[in-house]
Length: 388
Ligand SMILES: Cc1ncc(COP(=O)(O)O)c(C=O)c1O
Image (cartoon, rainbow, N blue to C red; front, side):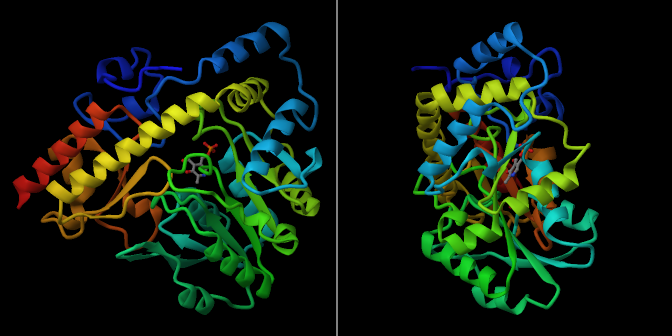
């Protein structure tokens, strides 16, 4: 399959209807490389499946969701090593963020302590703050060989009130894909302290250096204490359609999550289920093409930073389509977000939302065509040079 990934143009990406949140957030001359949406066209099988579904049936779906979709998700998880799943081990949700919130509500109580590696996808932190849990941050360490978990600091965080470990793997925003031995250490830690584990593995099919190891696949014991979250929105570029799933071998976890979501979670959306099913069934060639393209964008950014932005801290991501930059050594340091927006006219995500002490860090979404990635990097380099 060949689709247009290269040479996308801002004037077509900024649709005339104002549909795209990404492209309509900033003024027109700003290149928006913030929220995690791809600019690429979706797999053609998806709109076809949605139209067919609309023409056939849009009544209430079966309570548990579309059986064929559940089977395809089970097969997908099998490829990540997560096996022995049946439909009753899956709880469909309207998207992944509601499942993050439901995990927090179901697996901890107000005042409980919850550990997560930071920087991290901001709704982890919002869910904890908004529901009066105490967040214990386990900062990832940036070493010459990449991002590492600080296991000594992790041990020091545990108290009798610690209930839950929230893991993001592959990691947003660093793009780190944790090795099996690291996950085994985390699993041993969680079991020893009798913690629940929420493993957000939404990005698992967008990795360049694999394989992805599912946390719950490591042992029957950790499977009993883990809920795995995923959905179609990142891999298949379907964020506006929604769709998510909580997966656990421990049905009590799912029952508790369903309990806290009752009446507010809504039923699975038939169009997002049709889209997700088509994506898993027919989207593999599309996905492979996109992954190769993303990897080449990643490699382009890596050599660009080496050549033109040596003062910027950056570790190439092993997965995701996110580049995580430390501008704190640049002349404008902590004002990086504002300066890059105002001077370079590139809209990035401000590092401060991903955890404490991240002033001067920025996240760039490189799921767009190379001409735009290059334009953004050149604009950023000019702004840094101008400030020197
Ligand atoms: C780790 C992670 N979880 C969840 C989400 C959002 O999922 P959804 O849009 O399905 O709620 C994102 C979006 O970027 C993410 O990076």
